[in-house]
Amino acid sequence: MEIREATMNDIVELTRLMEHLGYPTTIENMKKRFINIESNPDYKTFLAAYDGKIVGMIGLVKGFYYEMDGFYVRIVALVVDSNYRNQGIGKKLLEEAEMWARKIGANGIGLNSGNRSERINAHNFYKNRGYIEKSIGFAKSII
Image (cartoon, rainbow, N blue to C red; front, side, top):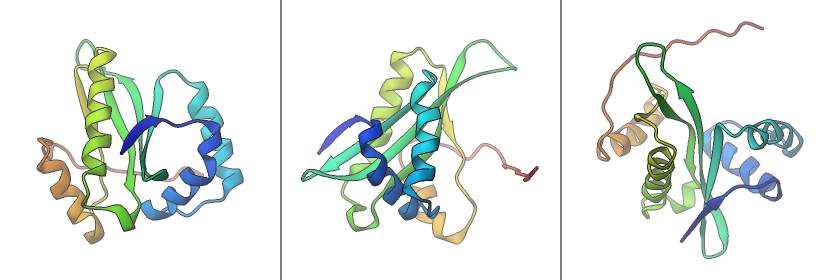
């Protein structure tokens, strides 16, 4: 398995992985999103390749605390192709994210994960890697 940074050449694979995450999109829409993501130095996207095929991704963003000094990294997307789960790919992506967070001097790393029943395995995955439940998330569409 290889972990590497995503590039614009990976748009087709990123689009396919968004579907595995439960967010179908088009190649054109993913391309528009990734142009913004890739051009911002506070974002980082890593891919996992297994036998030459892209099978996972993790998307990260650096953010600043209001309540204390320093900054954190937020995992904004983590997905492994459903045909490749339970093979250590997600663990490797998470380890890469944590290494990047340490490298840039972040104080912490966190994420939000939906409270839908299909996310139970994901929640257990995070807990087994030292992440703790810490808050309740809220969202509202404003368009």
